[in-house]
Amino acid sequence: MSRPSDQQPRNPDPGVPSAGRRHRIRTATRQAMQGISRPPAPNRGGRPPPRSRRGGELKVLPGLQTAAAYAWRILVVGGLVYALFSVLGRFHEIAVAVFLGLVITAMLRPVADLLGRVVPRPLAVAVSLLGSIALVLGILALIGAAVAGEREGLEREFRAGVGRIERWLERPPFRLNPEALNDLQSRIGEFLSSHRATLISTAISGAGRLVAVVTVFILALFCSVFFIHSGDRQWGWFCRQLPSAARERVSVAGRAAWRTFTGYTHGIVLVAGTNAVLVGVALYILGVPLAVPLALLEFFAAFIPLIGSPIALAVAAVVALAAKGPLIAVLVIALIVVIGQIEGHLLHPIVMSWAVRLHPVVVALTVIGGAIAAGVLGAVVAVPLVSVLWSVRQALRQVPEPDQLPAPAPERGTGT
Image (spheres, rainbow, N blue to C red):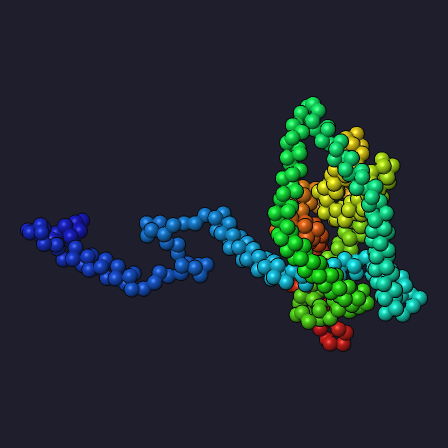
């Protein structure tokens, strides 16, 4: 049976479309116009269908999207950290005073707590602070008296030591020209005489810095009085000012930070004291002058991990070279190696491992970064700061989120 389209005569003019073809063209045109005027229908998930690549849109890989999301967040956090350190750098005297106040509190809070069991709390705080100040001033007075008593002998030994060093440099393998050494001494004298005004202005500015240092110490003592007396109540008041959802996490972070900071302070003081005793005894046995001041220098230098003790002992080696000759200087250098091994393999692992759990590479990078950012003060503060941040992170990982906390049990008698 033939179809109706086959029974119709063919269009005599091939350039003119037939009626059926014209109908199909109009229908396709109408559907295309409706598709342009109306947005595409959403799919089952409620999202518009993805556009084709033919439209010119570039498809971003999921890994690149994740990296971009992390990148801008890291930039925001980095900007906030930079702003914070800029503010602290602007008011660095206050930041240093608060840090020293926390150090004093970490050292004297156990003493005040022990005395507070038998005497009132204010009296215990006053006795612990005044007693520690008297102890420090007594040690400094003892060192000053030792240096003043040995001044004439030290000057004589240093002159003889400089002469021995010059004769040693003139012999093989150095074979330096004696005239060059004399010329060097004359040039140093000419430099000092020609830059006398600069040296005087530097000394005056140093006096101004001394006043600033004394002011910072006074402010640190003032802060430590209140930290020792009622630091826990001050922290509780601060936590109560926060939103209720953040109080628990901030309280846990604060306890972890203070526990790590006190552990680090006690540990580094113990390590520094042990190093100072070893250095003082060894220098006294070797007959090196200024043994007590050099031991005190070793005590303060030990607060800079990894690099402080070698620098202090290098100064001791120079003093030994000038006063006692190359043999004693070599023995002092051997002492540097021995004390470094004792500190790195015995004292730090035993004393500091329970308070600071940082890899030695992290400690070294932290010290160098702090020294680049803020000099000696940055090198001292960097390691406890990183240790506190790490302990806070570890403590917060163990605290459940507010939405993960178990729901409270229903009260009896409510019918639920």
